Length: 278
Ligand SMILES: [Zn+2]
Image 1 (tube, protein in one colour):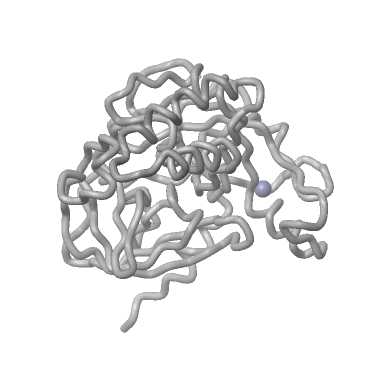
Image 2: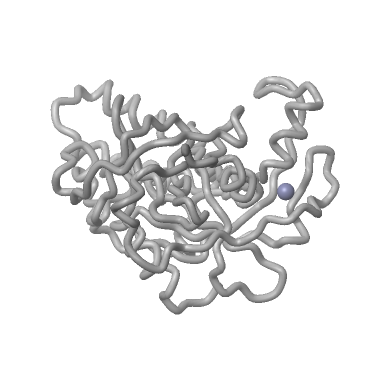
């Protein structure tokens, strides 16, 4: 009998967030110099193309998906695990990057699915209508593993219209072991802008390392990849890959027209176990 993913999907949905990184105007000079350094490492570009690339990096919001995790958070915080490669126009994997630096250079905005769905139910679209965002801050980053932890104040989480969102956003469980090879089918739930509650089903195909993915390794990522037969969309980066038990077995790093590449669950466990202030 075919496995019924509907209950797993229903349980996961309220734990999924949309996370947006916005380059700060006040730090434009520093961001420009960081972006120039990265653009300088890309071969075969004319000066105009390089300038356009830097200009685009400074003007563009980076939208990714995140999910609540059971990391220790003092007080009324929600910890959201997401990817770090929204910063790839400014940093390389070999750079030392601190949360303080990211919080100074970028504004971090978070919305939950209840807010996103409320916005569209009220007739809003990207060009029309006021959106309510919640400001977050980066608490931890491991850029070489493409992992970042964002913390928001629970009491500041907004619904569309401005009221506090009183819905539950339960922490997702990280799988304590390796994915079961006997059940390769898996689920991804993501929250790209315009598409909250996006569901994708796939099958685990194999494991690789970032060294086998030329395009992404150019910025210095270093981790084991879980390759899945699944096509992910723009803005799904950072989304959890979920097994039949509802446990997280990977975090979306990127993909191509046939496969998606997830950061291996062992890296998620190690990252969340690190000690550090929130
Ligand atoms: Zn909510």
